[in-house]
Length: 276
Image 1 (tube, one colour):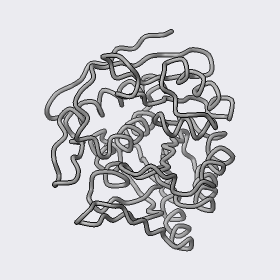
Image 2: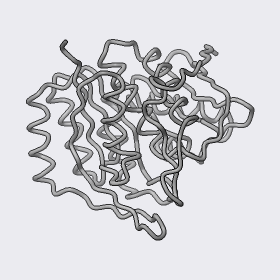
Image 3: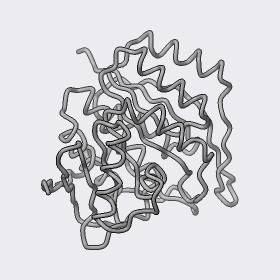
């Protein structure tokens, strides 16, 4: 059986919970053929779990991209991109590929950190990535940075951020509200330039959520590669990642990780979709 091919251009998380490790696990759970281009390596101090980021040499990035594009991925996603040069390379990779879908997970910080990896990354994402994006998947903090606003706290503020991101060129955006929006539901807001859709599940204990954002974006990428429409791909991905979070587990004394295969092995989660 021929599998659809999915490519992630991102950082590798040595702990296995996020980044390329999460992407490849998620691609596998969706029965797509996963490939990767490693643009940075992230390690953690075993004593404090503080992150250490080691960018990949640009010539190595180029060589990886050359190999990956020769295999003709059907869909491409980005994760942590450590420099403006790598952001431009990711854009060119998509434009020079046969891929029909480009999913941008605008990673700006490592989970547990607050500082943007490099303030220039935000400008580069807006200039080079958003105009070509099939779907952009920011969390609340990232949505605020991409729109030069404060972090949205209310549904109306999230909607305004979504409008701005589409104005910047993205075809679709889903802002991950999660538990950050008031109420008893975990809300994500999807916008396609015409209509808003609320995607909701019950709020759950998100203590073990390392890798959730990467897993969500990778699931969207796999769903698009397999022919799902953008809204359908996002809704299916939310169900997948919600199950992964609900069934997450403690990796060590510092962090808990999502269980990437929970939707296929433990339980399916129902997502409510409402057009507003």
